Image (cartoon, rainbow, N blue to C red; front, top):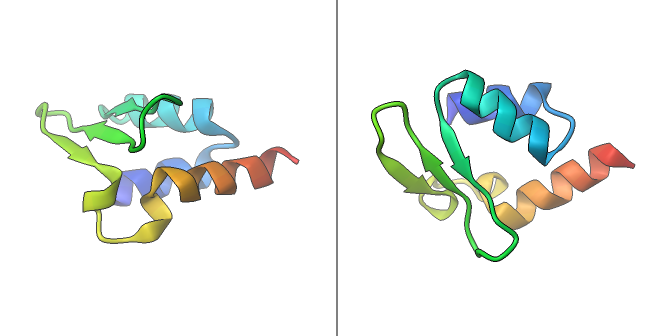
Amino acid sequence: MNVIDESIRISRNKEDFIYNMAQRGYGVNWSDNRKHITYITPDNQKCRDNKLHDDRYLKSEMEVFFSGLER
């Protein structure tokens, strides 16, 4: 979650966020067709956004956050 927090802090939109996560070795599967964001750790473990125990990491919350930054 620390890597996600840091990437959110320095990102202006979804694309920046995905790029910043990749720079830290994490994959992000964020598709408009899917309900959840899936994170892939550097050692290839997968974790969905709803397993991170904080609603601010949910796809719906992240979309609202980044849409607010783009305005």
